[in-house]
Image (tube, rainbow, N blue to C red; front, side):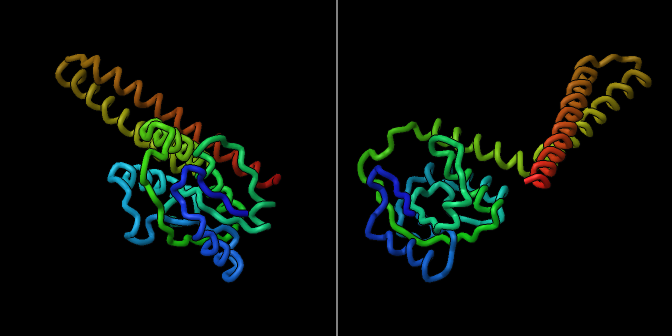
Length: 213
């Protein structure tokens, strides 16, 4: 199965490049990447946005792709049977990558050319990018809850302890009450504790689901 964006950016004549990766090299999913060579002339903000989203996506998978948002892809029969997307809109690109990784499927990127002539996008670039990034972070946080929530929670707890130490030092040695330090220490400690508990709960749920399914 071949997917291709309907906005005219991709060149249908390059479809055989993706098919060759599937058939000749026994790859489950082939992605056409606009960043494997220097032929694509994308704007600076577009490149930066895609690189940020791709970096977040790579963190949640076992792959190191260069273009996670490319809609020009080829899927083998095994991939079609294994992947069942649930997202709507452009966020599905990241969801599929994470499910490819979870299912242990193989993936390869193929260099392609892309055209940005004319106004091919119907969505605001900033709102679209933020939406995709938010969904990518959501999937990454679910797959790596201890790293995503746990480490952040520990940092907040430590910061709360430091600020509480500042408050106690001023109160015991100078008889001065720093209400700002007291409030900050309480808020930081509570937020850190909530994040740590969230990490443990999500980690336990994720492992339970993996064991059952």
